[in-house]
Length: 444
Image (cartoon, rainbow, N blue to C red; front, side):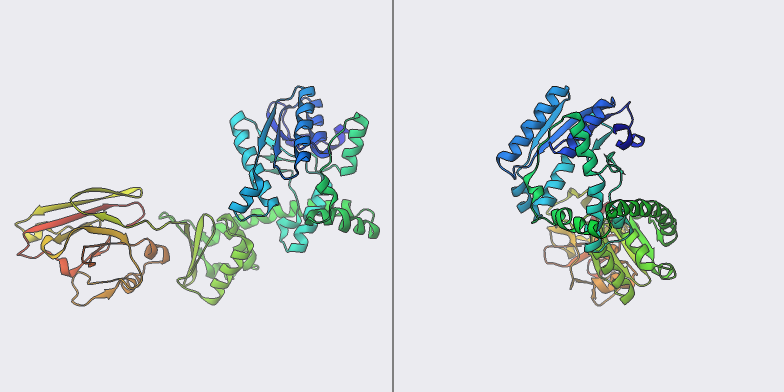
């Protein structure tokens, strides 16, 4: 039976694997099979402190099993309830996040090739049905993959009954998580109620669902390949860190919403957020943005703009001459006497030259705010900074990144990288020049 069920195609006897062992039948069988087949393994056990003495019992069982087999065991303890409360997550989500984050760190620390977990075909059926009832796409219906990054699942062709029979033949005991016998958790309801009911309709229901999931995984590989090709046609990767999604090209595709979901997912957006982005595109929304954990998407005209999320910096006070650090960049302030107005005026957009007599220290470098006004060089009247940036055809992210320098009176003396204020212009009577030079990453 070992030969028939362990997926050796995804394993390599030259590599070391980290096997997650809870003490239950599935993980115990996995550890035994890999050990018997001669794979290099180390075990890891997580105690989530959710089931009192039962959790401690599981840990001691795993420790004893690994000790008898001569397998190195890594143990970790989590305060799962506190973590869940702190991060506003369900207990199940918190436990999963804690588990896999630790697994990956440990994998790197010991130089293991991958983390091996004991999901089997019954788990896959439960996952497919849960995804279906929640609403899902092709990937959700494809179920659990045997290889997902550094996570391997070599038991997906084996059922829970196969596993129990294997352990029975090996005369190997295991522990039972009592919560698996309760129906209060969603997955357990599928395991204990829904799937048995399906078997009364079709005794081969689980096998058929698994076969369907495998077919959809294969179809998904083709779809993903096609989506990647399409993405290259509608997404222009910007050298300035701003990617552009051409919505006109997107609308011409057979399934623009589906393609957009694929594109958005690559930037960390959920399907629900992708739907919002699609509505922004369809409604012609301008100047609105939505954020994932890593990126922002903004709608403008016939395109969507995508950029890495940027936290607006705190204002920087510059009371005297000197060099000031601002994020990953810097800004230099100098005061110099002048005898020639023409030669004192800087030509670079990254340098502002201002009449010292027209401003008051300290200067402050900060992001612009709604309602900010300034008098652009060469104009008599003031203008909203927002209107100036719009006239300059600045996109959402360029506008958001825009910085200003104001003096102690609150007068904006420089729109950084753009234009100085007419109120601070250098004239023939200027005696001292304030020179402000910026070298700010991504602010040009």
